[in-house]
Image 1 (cartoon, rainbow, N blue to C red):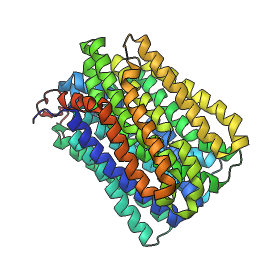
Image 2: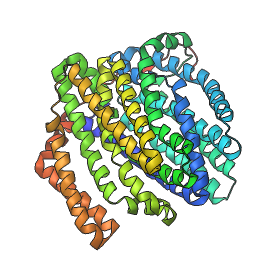
Image 3: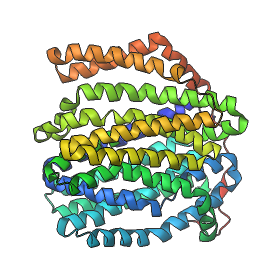
Image 4: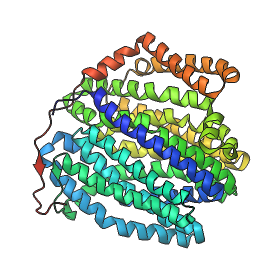
Length: 486
């Protein structure tokens, strides 16, 4: 296989994830329209439980699989087999604990069913992420993109089929859970196609790695709590189901758009793992490029989307969700802090500074919770959105401080000024066009204006740098020594 450039790898995973997220938005829009705001809010609460309990299936080991797989490719097949066995063993235990917890909290009827099925769907996403990690460790972003696309194709086909057939709520959300289970099988098939045959795994080596991975697990848990606790807090403080439905509709849009910075950082995870071994100067160079690329695709979406949020919300969900526009305009700004955080976390994993991640996530969560307690009683779900921005800003500052402590010199201004200036010029243009020519012309003109200013400001240098960086030579095909292949 020829050695692909970082730009080509980013293009592969971005294409797969854009297709996947576009399909997901179509599905979410149909779910909101057909099921109504009440059921849509129940889906949001069900997935929130799954996101929180997923830590038991993914205790930070996927990131270590990528890092160590890049550095020791000869051990990849063994580690993949062991981790797969661990996840299979933990799935029924976690699913049962999650459902029991919801029942003990008083969830009944459709709400408890949503926790069981939608939460279970999120638990099964852990197997998709595991397969994606195994592919990323080999820098097979073509197959990683294929997996993400296949995941949403299955969800759309089964979910839309149930919706169009006017099947009951339980069958609709059950079809989504089934689609995720099928995705897990697709992921295993793609891992085998990459050259890693998954044999019989051992649980003991994985449990021995838990003391190393626990900071990542705690960090992930804190991030998930940060992302989902706002809905739970708002519910406990008496916010209506309809308002939570509006909020959840914005969350789904943001989750779909997270693919842009995430696709960039996924490609740079193996790059940074190698760069750290080459020295801090090389690591600083790669980190600066990663942050440039992540913000170049994130800032225009966050800024432009915020200015056109009402149109975006109405286009996707219909006029019933027109009131979600002001919430979405704030929620989209979280993408910027998210891009900074995940780029920084990729470096911290490469450097082995895992506890620093935990402290940063804890600080972000603390700021978020305090802000929620102060703002939700006064502002409702708008207070939850503002609190997410406060927490994200605190975590981003913590990330930059941690990078400085590692001795990695990140040229922050150089990494961000082109995207910032281009986004501001784009925003001015969109504000002029928005009231006169409507939503679609505003989107098109904003995209053209941003791209033009970015390239004129020297953004082509970033593109050239991404194109000239090549992945490591491919490792020979490996087979698991454990015996039977899955």
